[in-house]
Length: 446
Image (cartoon, rainbow, N blue to C red; front, side, top):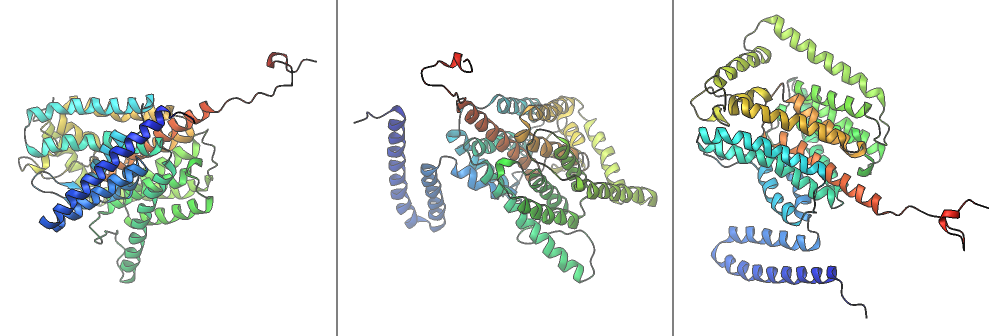
């Protein structure tokens, strides 16, 4: 009889501990049912999550991915978060405790870059004490570091393809709703941008940005996703059509940048058809033409001139405290202007000062450098999505829940999948053909 190994003993111990936890939860759940029905439902869901982790440790991070795109707001009084934030926060602890260790060098560097920004932005939290400032400091960490850890757990455990498919699938649902409501608008003669009001409110810029991320994923079509070409082409068509329906110029530009990166980066092992450059050029020309027309008409209230006004006002706010800024989410305090600056650097500069802006540039540029050095068949997609987000952030709001967490979630999945692929390739022995009775050193000799 073969003696039990250390791994067998570890599995048995985990199974016994999980069984004891489930039994305890069932007893508590029975008592809770008598006291409160809603709390009993919450308890039952928690018990289900515990049971899933017994079957697969990263089941919760994987199943949380579709919820990451849900931007419906929850909370109030300075704690205004989205369901996406709640999903990432809950999945983070499962990913942290049950995810694979150790992190790869690239993953560790990405987390250190996030820590640099968090340390630098802590100064404004100390100097400007108010609730929204403190909450947003933790929120920014969650959007970057938390999303990276969740993505890593999914990719490193071998579920990168499923995780990315769940993410794209959720975005396709939003794309289908966008096209359906867009068709209804056209039927009544409304040619304006599509805003979704069901099943919850979604701004056109949010829809366009999110669907541009998903379109980048299906256009890149990495081999490890195992998507047939026709599936990728169909999904890309639906997603880009929905982006066009939103008329979000920032999304056009960011998607164009991502497509060009994916198209010309070598070493991915996938051929990308160059015909995509035609609609990319057309979209960019259309955006430039629209901006030029808005400048020429001289309307101080159109989107172009409004942004220029906001830029000036953001710099005015920054001058109140150039070193550490006036606080995160300062536009909610009622002491300054009531708009979020539509530019990443100006938002960070006015919120965290020159110290925070320097750290933000380290986070963004350093992250791009790290992802560019990852093997192209995994790193290209992560680099393209993160670069497109940074470009989009030059023309619109940056620190917005889903629009930040999704790129870093994708980056985490790619980093985890790359680390797993490296381990698998290193574990495969190099085949050696030996002749009977002759050592390998003499192979090939007569």
